[in-house]
Length: 191
Length: 168
Image 1 (cartoon, rainbow over the protein chains, first blue to last red):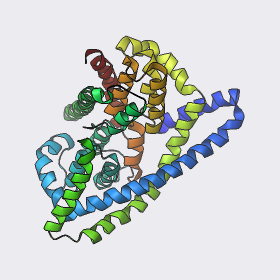
Image 2 (cartoon, each protein chain N blue to C red):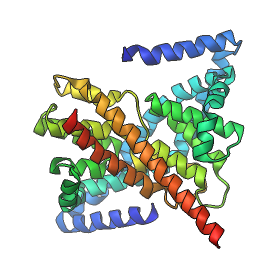
Image 3 (cartoon, rainbow over the protein chains, first blue to last red):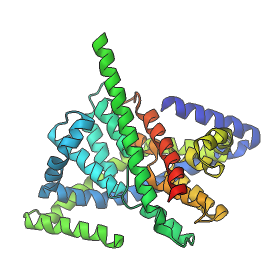
Image 4 (cartoon, chains in turn brown, yellow):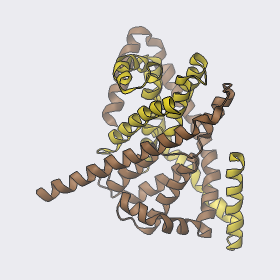
């Protein structure tokens, strides 16, 4: 993250210094301002979703779901304590249902609980990041909405392809990560 | 069908909670209360990454890189029109939606490029955005292989999307 950020910023700045130096600072401020707007929007979205999620938690739906998905999460994430497992299961279900706004706060909480303070991401955290960033959605609502606005004659005919490729992306990501974990284990044993 | 999905889901959660004798009102407030803290926590991280996205966009670095990698992408089956989208997608959700609209306007919604772009945007999330958010509340500094693996998976996903659009 560190390296990528630095090099991309440095390269862009060099180009801009050459072609148009006066827009560097304004556009940085512009980006910051639009982020503030985005955060306000996120705050509104999170308030609604976290309210609903709290209701779910208090009524015990979380626990049921987490029990149901336990075998799957155990394979992928390794052993998790009950509360974390609950958060992870909810995060995954929200992602699949296309409630990205609800999935993010759950994921962040789960990450906090997985954090061991060593400054290095452990296996469960890495898996969660891969899962969330390649997340599959059953209904790609935003894209379909955009297609309708753009005047498509069959806006939703991309659905099947989207679902297949979404599942593919997630499965590949998790599979690669699992293979890396396996290799690491073998390496450790050889030492 | 899909417009009913979420409202019905939320209503049934509330009703179920009521049956379980949960104080829905208080419970909702308790959850909503945490949202401000989260947003305050993620703001600095988001600003940092958004500044980067803005700079690589206005400097033309993004389109330059797109030109640079397009021969490789072409070999993998990704058409040249979509290179910029595939490159920018991991960084910015809003940015890639803007490019998607641009592709619709330039090549047509129902063209091959238009459909491909829709599938690519719909099938995965923005890797860097998600990573930044998820790590913002932890002490993690080193991510080992998380980001590269996610990026490879997204790229492979894009290749498969282009293939699928040819078939379906």
